[in-house]
Length: 224
Image (cartoon, rainbow, N blue to C red; front, side):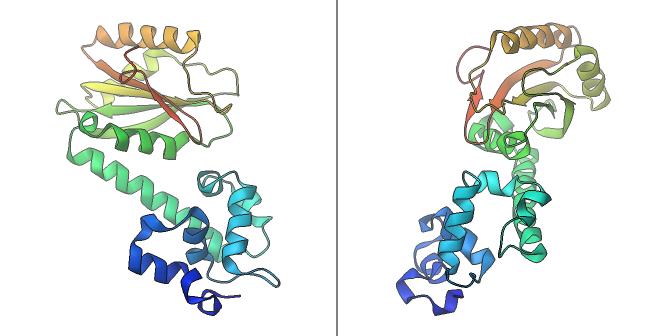
C-alpha cells in the first residue's frame, strides 16, 4: 500500500506538514523515504519492521550494503537514499562545528561522533583537530581494532595534530559492546595522550566514548 492510499490520519507526509518532523516516529520518517510497502504490508508497517530488525534507525543507517540488500522492498535506489540521509547529517554537523567553538554546543559534538563511529562493528579511534578558537579543522579515523583491543600511538596523533596546526584535539572512540563507561585502559590512554600532546602545547579538550545509542564525555563527567 503506497502512502497516498493510507487513511488521512495515518499518512506521515501530512502529519509532518501539519505538526513538524519531530512529531513523526522513526518508522514514519523511514516510510516517507520508502514511499511504498510490499504485498500484504503497508509502507508504515514495513518501515517499522525494518527499524525493529536493525535495532533502531541508527542501526539501519549505519548498516552495510549486504545487510540492506537482504531486506525485501528495499532496492538499490532506496538504499542509496538512506546512505545519502546519513551523509547529509554528518556533513551538516561538521559544518556547524567549523562555524563556532565546538564546546559551546556539546550535544552537536556528541551527535557528530556517534554518527561517525557509533555503529561501527569494530573499535574505532577518531581524533578531531581543533584550532585556537576551538573550531573544527579536520577529523580522522586514526586507528581501528577489534571488539576488545585497539592500538593507539601517541606519536602518530601528535604528528597529525602538528600537520593540521591544531591547538587542541578531541579524542573519540566507540564501544561496539554498547557500554560507554570508560575502562581503566581508556583512562590510562587518555592520560598518555594528554602528557604526550601537552609537551607540544596541544590540549586534549575531551575524550568521548560512543555506542550506537549512547555517549559519554569525560569532560562533562569530570574525569578528564
